Amino acid sequence: MITVPPGGPRTKPRALNAALPLARGALLTVYDAEDVPDPGQLRLAAALFARLPARTACLQGRLVIDNAGDSYLARVFALEYAGLFDVLNPAFARCGLPVPLGGTSMHLRTAVVRALHGWDAHNVTEDADLGLRLALAGYTVGDLPSPTFEEAPARLGPWLGQRTRWLKGLVQTSLTHGRRPLDTARSLGGLETLCAVALVPGTVASALAYPVCLVAAAWSFLVLEIPAAPAFLDNLPTGLAITLFGTGLAALVLPALAGCARRGWGDLAQSVPWMPVYFLLVSLAAWLALIELVRAPLRWNKTRHGLARTSRSGRRARRGRPATPCDTARGPDGGACASA
Image 1 (cartoon, one colour):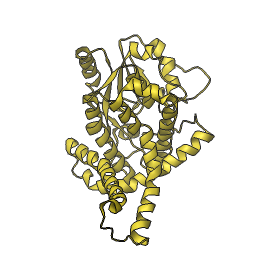
Image 2 (tube, one colour):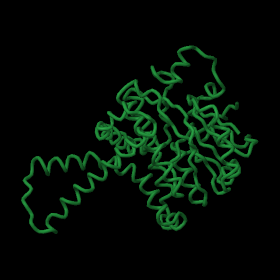
Image 3 (cartoon, one colour):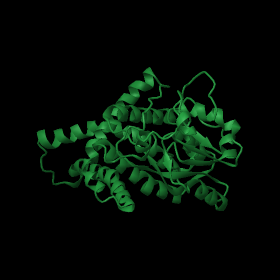
């Protein structure tokens, strides 16, 4: 356990950079302070690294929200994570595409992280930035089929602060790697570039545009009169709009449904129809992220944990268990536990 030297920025990646020179093992793992990983996760990661080629520089564990019973927000957050970590990430990894890292339960080759000069201390989603830099350097990310249980914010205020930081960091990552877009595209490759654009700037752009598109669609179909258009080209704009809306909605809910099926969450699947409403809150966070990017680009909106009624970390906190090194290492810099 180390104390991060005084100074700024007061971010999690700066804390990780302070610990990186002290890592002595060939592998290092990043956990958030409140995480409850599967007991065999570290051994499984080490065994997979021993079998995988050296170009696989990172294994991303599967994050599971375990306080879904606390609130509507926690339930839909759990659906999001089920779709991302049990469906989309394994598919991206299998295809050799850039994988959205989770910021925790990341198992990395120490030498590769050092060769990339660690984390960007000025990026508030250092995981997104590191994932792109790994891809640009020719490395791949693998899926680690081992759960790590996390606590989701159950109230709107903490959730909004966390999601605003995440989206602000995606904008920062987009600006960093978009300074020379042609060079970035050549380094990544065609399909990899499309994937990166969809996952990083595309996530923010879709959240920003979502309410605008909803209002425009509602105005067109409920207020304006849409005349019959017998010609194909006359029908094309309306047809494209309906098709895009349908495919976008499917892309939102189908991974969540598949994730529920894989995790055996039949009861939770009933909340999937609420995801389009939930995405309005994501849009609000995206607009707040743009404001914060201008006014406070390095602000790290901290999220309090151990408060949930149904999470493992919350139950352990209420029992008054002794603090672990990860608990006490939280500190002002965002809190992270790195084990090598």
